[in-house]
Image 1 (cartoon, rainbow, N blue to C red):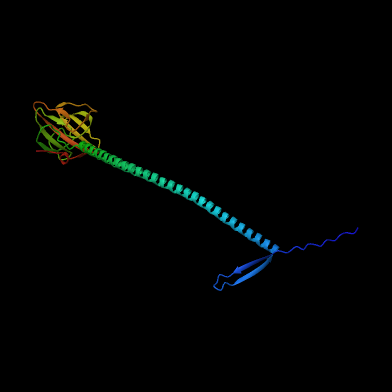
Image 2 (image 1 turned 90 degrees about the vertical axis):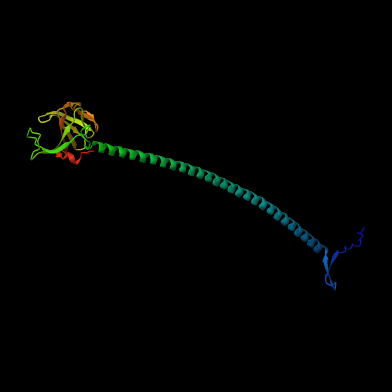
Length: 264
């Protein structure tokens, strides 16, 4: 048998018409005819573009949120640093205030110590000056008033009378019961006999000066004794006595009248 041929069905092609109407007052319109495939391509393209736009918007939104979070963290970190620095400044200010207070206290203490040292130095200098002054044989050599005469003593003669050549000497008429006293601080250097006056006491004042006391009274000190101005050296007897008083400076005789302090 032969094949029976059936008539072929014709597929109708789908077409899409897009009308674009103008928004103007004339309301003109334009028609665009697209085939089925072209319409699908256009639809997929528009869908892809829409998806891309949505994804981009989502990305931008997420990025913005991340930036906000990062900026917030950065601001928080910066604020923490600022707070820490402000705290450090506050601590340093407190320490500086404490140091200033301590410095003021130290300065006040230094000034007090300095004043105390100055007072001590002044006192020490005054004491030293007083000691130097006290060691000068300037005092009156008797405990009571007495008349005196300035003479020249000849060491080679036994006479008490004034000589033409010799050493300066003051001769005092000491009253009974009075004392011969040291004219300055020092040490009893020697106690010897004296052919003219009986006995002789020499005091070394430690500054180049020596004072010499020549009398026949009772000796009240010993060699090596430390004496002050006014210390009794001789006790004068009931009949009174004559005191021969001399001063040496660097082993040279000087006039006692130039140094002695006479009151009244």
